[in-house]
Length: 248
Ligand code: ZN
View 1 (cartoon, helix red, strand yellow):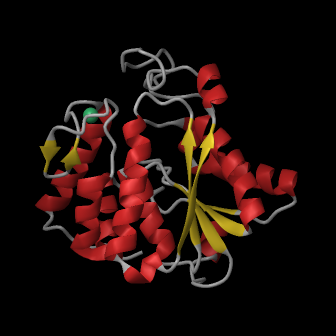
View 2 (cartoon, rainbow, N blue to C red):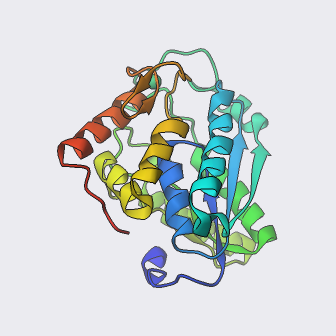
């Protein structure tokens, strides 16, 4: 797999992190900063209900720039790409006022068909312009959700299609693909210690309902939506294990 062949590379072409301001993409950002000399971030405004998610991106970036000098020197510009037209096409519980429920296909109604594929196309076009080779995303097969566009097989096909279609040599990196949510907390600690864990708790945002009022040991959120439940359960498991550090 392409990602494996890059395991020893710490210099050279930089990375573009698909960065939502959530826990997973924050860990991906730290992973990239620990690994590449030049790291930029991209976000997508596809008409999500909660501009809180976009605000969290700035908070997380500022926290990393202030608290991790080595990483601050590597952290390049951020861009938010406007994709509201896509959001209009792929209306779902995240973009319309629909309840979060399971659909007949066994997917949660929060699934936006093709969303991650569209993100990757836009990210690749931006990376091409910025001269960045590595596209880093928090896609994960061990999630409850089983989103088909987060599976590694899908991303391998996407990497091939993008490289053929853009005459490029991109590597789609997914450092969280095979780890649990508890292991994601451990990876955060391995990358940036308890300071990074605290940054994730304070500033990253995951809750589907956009709740920034209720503070828990794992961060802000309603505590009951699927995203909050997943984040809380992972944190509790990691805490029960004694807050181990996992090194990338
Ligand atoms: Zn929630």
